Image (cartoon, rainbow, N blue to C red; front, side, top):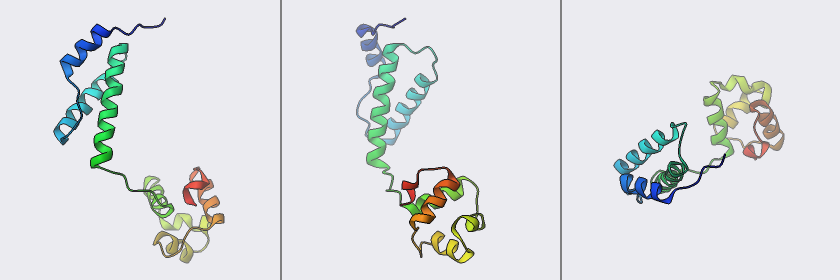
Amino acid sequence: MTLIFNSKNYTNLLIQYQPKVIKTEAENERAIALAEELEHNPHRTPEEEALLELLVILVEKFEEEHFPIPPQTPHSLLLHLLEDNDLKQEDLVGVLGSRGVVSEVINGKRGISKSQARALAAFFNVDVGLFI
């Protein structure tokens, strides 16, 4: 069964919530709260789905401008994966080689070679391109 988009219902939603370009953190928080409310509604109407999509776009635009994510480097990604998996340097000795090599890679004194990138990708079950 296909649900039909009702323009009048959508207009009423827009009047009720009045979404607009987000300029402040408070506006962003309100938009996020409304988006979460809509997201958790298992019986969203097509009009609510459209409003949710609009809110997500507005929040993403605000956050990209105000909280940019710095580009990931192979080194920063490795540190993140270690932390995320609750691992220590010692856990990479069997993957990268000696303790000295692991220490140099972790501390950014040595780059990640292609063979090390393949080994890390297999160890963390991620794409090898993340380390190259």
